[in-house]
Image (cartoon, rainbow, N blue to C red):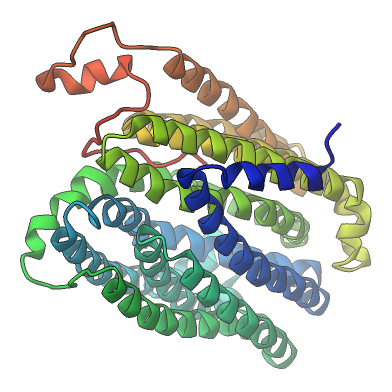
Length: 475
């Protein structure tokens, strides 16, 4: 039986065996370096913050971050993914258009980030008083509006950098932000408690946006792109053809997770229970960093290959992504699960009883990681409305299960169980659909009718021709 270290070594050697794999390996290497350092520092700081705030305070931080994340999904409109896909697609075949898309994405991202932050400020008093039943969190949510603006804008900036395959530059920015956020969070919680933590994260996000902007200007010049605001109206259809469907699919996730959290904190002792779930879910999110990184590397490669009518390369990139997700996530999940009582005790003695919650969210993380590659297949074949329908089904199962279990007094354990059940059911129909999709082949010698592309596309594997519409990867 191969050890995880040996498997990783063999995987990396295989990735370097051909040019496409070498591109994937180089991008993944820098993405991993930057994110592992930044996420490691964030995880360490969360342990310190939890010890200062306790279970209830840490639960309040969790619901604040979930609220910021929900508004961030609404504000972002998936412009980062839009920029990645289209900059990668046109940077070689149509540099002038790629330059316009960079400008369009930057302007639209700034506008939508400002609108989203403004909406959060306006809605904060109502949400804190009537939804999460914690009026004292109103000023904290308003501080979170600054974090929302920075995160949304940074997402667009790094989306462009990913489209340029500037993963080394992204790694440097992430390390800078991680190194800066660690002392700011610790100093913030020591001096001002929960508002100081959120403010510290927001300040590090603002610095990250400034560094992103500087790096982005350098990378676009290096790529030979002329970023101009002329004729930006020509790129408006991208919002309808790509961003809107991608947003509708992604919007199922953030708001649903926020709603589930709101259901939990409204229970007796709900914020203490939310603290348990938040501590456990930190490790789940850490595991999902790797699939997210590999997806970030794979999307620009697939988009560029599709633009050049290289469908076989696209399929190969997907296989590499799925193998890498399995190799990195499953062994790590098993190790953390085996140490779950000790892991939870890091946050304080009152967290130790939450180790079953950690086990459940780790199981869900494994399912999510494996689904990421399947979601890329659905994305590549342009089935965006199928993705949205599947995410809607996931939301119904998750909310329904959580409602039943919380009514029975399961608390955080019920939320974690609903989390696992939701992704378990979701996995079934995602993998069944993808399996059927991959086993379909076009009839020999048959050419698809351009006028009936939407219906005949269901008879094709990953297409050798790019399409104007693409679904987002499923969560």
